[in-house]
Length: 122
Image 1 (cartoon, rainbow, N blue to C red):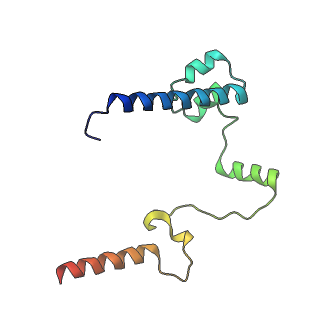
Image 2: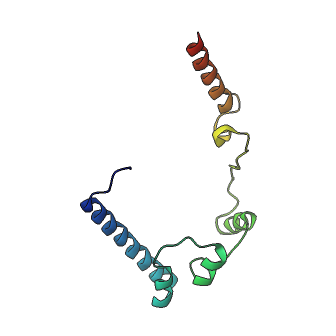
Image 3: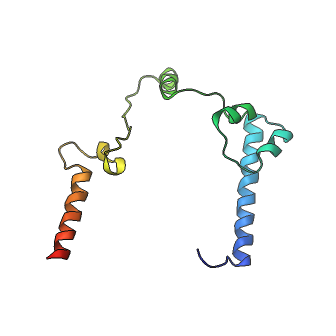
């Protein structure tokens, strides 16, 4: 990453990115019925906030998480949802994926680090 990118690599990468961009713009044009003027405005593949994306026709609306869950319930029924909200104190945010009777991931990592530290000291 500290060396200059060879011309051939840069050319190939540029060609691939341009191809993907054209594909993406084609999808937007086709599926969102967006005209050429708006396509030119979004051609550079910028990141848009929700209000700007709505104004450009890139999204259908703005809603909260609870509104989206309610909409899913209306469309597919009341399927069970697993709460994957992450607790800031949860190391790597993976404790909800581990079975409750197992050690917490934080405890496992702490044990590993303490064992590694004691083997370095001893």
